[in-house]
Length: 338
Picture 1: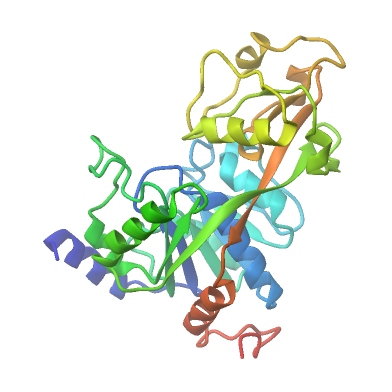
Picture 2: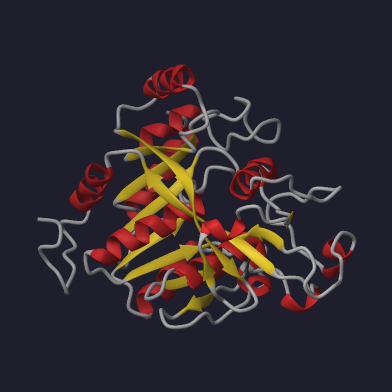
């Protein structure tokens, strides 16, 4: 173990936390699906009676440096400009959950606890050493778990693969993309670095949201529909592929792609929208939709909602997490995990 890792682990052991913390993180930059995983986990914990908080950095938000509450569990208090896209998406999709942001995640956790959280999910927390956690769920892309295999800045790895020794469980996301041979090979590679349980998950389309009215529409509403798709993700191509599958038609996309966490401006859309009321609908991701001002387009603005689905072992994963929480029984349901 490196001297830096030893020092960081020692520091974490000295720190205390105001409540049990479960980290959802990864080994690479972007593209592993942390947002739907955090939301899946929060809903699971809520089912058992926990008052859950989500502590996030608030990447790109103007309030990130000083920290702020994004949701009190009843309403969303900040915009995507102020809190970043992912935090606002958590607030919108997780009624009852406390959501807070801060570059210093200690502050974000404290804000959650101050507003009633009994357990906090730390969004993108695997490398945030100084906060002790009861469980570390590490996400790896099932097809390319190491990215290009090189550390930043030449690659996407944030840490060496040996860091997986800190994980409590591994979740292989987008497990529907690799072949069975690729998946088996990657599992064997991961086993060289950790012996913790490995689970598999994929992202499935849930429904469509009309961003102007707030209405939820079935996926079938896209069938045979002409749409114009845009996104600002680490990998936009998979989103476009999914939209084509749902519509069954060719899909217009921008001439110039935008990357992850792109801060959308009106001019980004003006170049390829018709500007006509009743024109071809626009469709994007939920993460991008929270950054779009509805007044920028006259067309219908849709977002495709995605949910995490575990292939199997959902109960086993929750049982592992429950074991880490047995010293912190929920006041409302002390025997929830028995």
